[in-house]
Image 1: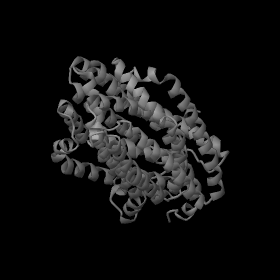
Image 2 (image 1 turned 90 degrees about the vertical axis):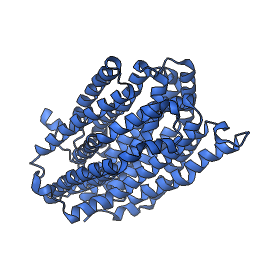
Image 3 (image 1 turned 90 degrees about the horizontal axis):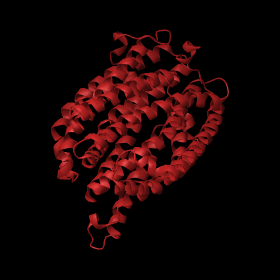
Image 4 (image 1 turned 120 degrees about the vertical axis):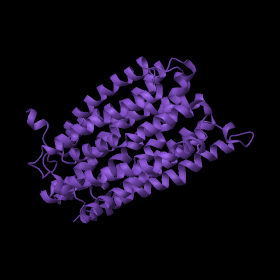
Length: 460
């Protein structure tokens, strides 16, 4: 029984909803655990740092930039996951072996290149984004330490993505839970005992990420019954590198677009002052947990679609899309109800400042209904990506983020300002623009899924 639990799952057989749900549940727990990395950082600095509210703002202001730094690896992970799922479904051992090996090599090269290119400009970026002087030093410390340890974050996301592409969502969960417990312990040690504040939580996070990625690497090395693992397969091969880039680039660009918008909007957020920054950070922490089922179903459906497309069974793909999307929507509806009823209690976990709790809860109520829309977007985008169509979700993200969210946020701030100065406008512009993006994204994703062009995008 235990051996079956940790073995790759063939999702081309059995009831679609059952396979999707069995794959999603451990991954959902894992995604929630991963969200604890940043959430525990926020709780610990909020409770134990010398100036807790400013420390919360510093960590939150750094995250959009970190997300931007990770876009390369998100692309590699997305391309690898699709290739692994399709090669697994097609029982192509050689393709699977070279995909895994080439991903490891490409990630190492990208990690070193990123440190060299980005490190000298971190401070200038923070100044360009109007980061308040009261939090800029803490924000820089968090970013610099995260950048130096970027390989740990990158390898966990990519290697766990490969393992999930093989249908094993349990192993990645176990490794992540171990790392999460380690992260919590190190957070408390570095901040509460050693008084390292923001730098302490950054250091705890990267150490924990390296531990989880090491577990994933050992797991892959032991899966020789599925594929060959060794130095020979890590030598870059043009065919596989190009396919990784071809499939992963749109997903990486999607994240880059989203992160760029977050950075641009972060500049507007910063103009509303430290209290609003902190409230927005607390809201986004709860938002991160609320989004986890959507991301989990989306990833599960990517693997499901990839395996079944590899096996050439498109009727089964469509059946799984309907069942998986319905489960995701029902789950998000339940989460929305919980947020509306218990929101204040959730916000009070992060801070004892009453005004901050009230403001955070108000922002959360604006976003709550949008999680149902995101369930549709993530599920159907997962199907398209798994089938090999990673371009369509990218274009939808480009339209909703660049053409809608950023102009809408700045437009509301400008037209609600009595003085014509953005900082005097309505701060709620941040949440209204985000909600609008989610709803429009769901409509466009549904329409493009129904058009069916994703059916002809399988890799050769």
